[in-house]
Image: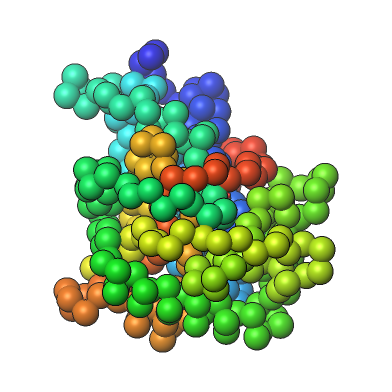
Length: 330
Ligand SMILES: Cc1cc2nc3c(=O)[nH]c(=O)nc-3n(C[C@H](O)[C@H](O)[C@H](O)COP(=O)(O)O)c2cc1C
C-alpha cells in the first residue's frame, strides 16, 4: 500500500472507481464528483437528472445510494493510506452538495486498515435476485453486520420468524401497489436495459431474477411482467434471512449515514461469502414504511430490508465512470 495524502489525479481516479461500484436504486448512479484542488477536497453531489419522481419523491433512496458511494470512497482512501475527513451536507446554500471528503493527512498507526477483504468486496458485491440455499448464516457473521451498521451511524435489526413474516407482508403489499400503478411500472421499466444496450445506467434484463413459485418472497418486478422478460418462477428459500436497516432520526444526514451503513453491511456480508439482495418496496409508501418501524424503540425510521444468505452470485451491472465534474451551484 502506497501512502498518499494529496488528491492527485491518480488518487481521485482510485477513489471514484471505488465510489461508482456502490449499489444505487434502479442503478441510477445518482452521484457526481468534483475535486476541488484549491480546498484539497473531493465534493460529492447528487445528480438531479437521475431521480425517480414516483418511486423516490423525497430523494431518500437517492441519498442512500450516494451514502453507499461515500462509504466506498472512505474505504478506498484508507487503503491508500489517507485519513478521510468527511463532512455531510457541508453548505446549506448548496443543497446538492451532499458531502465533502478531505484527506486529512496520513493514517495513524492505529488507523491502519487490517481488513483488505472489505475493499476486495467492493468489486465482488452484486445484488443477487435468485433463490438462496437456506443454509443458516452463522451468528457471529450476522453480529458483525450489525456492528458495521452501528459503526456507520445506523442500526440493523435481525427479526425473528414472526418479524420476518411481518416485514415480508408489508413488502408484498407495497409490491402489489406498485404493480397496479401504471406510472410506477413505466418509471421502473425505463431503467431496465436490453442486452447489448449502449448505456452505463440502469439494470440489464440479465440481472433480473425470477418470481417466487410459492409467492412468499416479494421480489421486485421491475418490468410489470413484460412478456419475454419474466423468468420462470423458482422456489425461494423457506426461511428468509433478512435484516432491517434503520436510523433513530430521519433527516437528510441520517439518510446519508444509512447509505454508508448499508454499504458497510453489504460489504461485510460479501467478505464472508454471503449474497445479498435489497427489498426496498415498503419504504416507498409512507404508511407501509411507518408500519415497518419496530414497535420499540419509539424513534425508528426504517430504510431498507436486506435479504442475505448463500447462493448464486448476481450478474454484474454497468457503471458510468465517476466523472470528476460536479455542479458548483447546487
Ligand atoms: C436505495 C436502494 C434501493 C434498492 N431497491 C431494490 C429493490 O427493491 N429490489 C432490488 O432487486 N434491488 C434493489 N436495489 C439494488 C439495485 O437495483 C442495484 O444496486 C443496482 O441495480 C446495481 O446493481 P448491483 O447492486 O449488482 O451493483 C436497491 C439499491 C438501493 C441503493
